[in-house]
Amino acid sequence: MKMVELKILKESAVRELYEAVPQKLSVYRNGSFDVLLSDSSLFLNTPCALDPQGIEGLKNNLSSSDEVKSCLAIANGLDGVTPYLARDERLWTRLTHFDFFEYSRARWPIPDDDDKAIIHIRKHFFARDSRGIERDNAISRLWWMSELCKRVQNLSLKEALTAFLYQSDVRASIIERPTTSQNPNVLSVVINKLHESYLGDKSLFEREKFRALMKQLNIQGGVRLLEALNPADIEGVIDEVAKDMS
Image: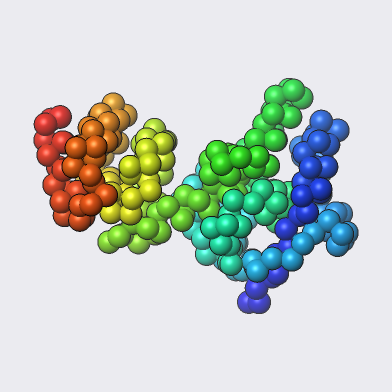
């Protein structure tokens, strides 16, 4: 199936949409912004494209909170996104308002209270800063989680995502610690350990146990410079910490 060229919104168009949220609540709740697609003056060309077949997994996932399936759909269906473009709010605002509007609305239901709805929409349908891009925007968060898990060695993307997304507190602990999330070797070992636990007794997903493990790993990182260790050595550090905690 032919790839579909993807144009991003101009900055001025994003700004107008953001400012108009209070007046457009009925559209976000029950309508569509598709009429704007015919106005070429609102868009800019990009090297990105959508694979209609690849994104079907997301469009068919409206009634489910299956994050793994959603991440895989974005990873397989969104092509040409560079790390630079992935930081651009114009891309993600376009996707949440048009191509994945129904998914975004279903995944992040809009509150009945108007004041809460405005805050909610601006959080999940736009991407004002790094946190918004990596964690809040309905579509960009899926892309960033997939990109993170693509760096995990010895596991398929689906296996890595399954372990990473199984427990929200565990996911947050990984993302919030640069020692883990920004080091491919450390990240790979941690996710592999989570995968082993997922297939077993799942004890590593216990909130306090995992937080304590990550805290000790950070301490060890300061002592041993985890960035300089190979995966086998990092695994040894994690096993040593886990043994001391048991």
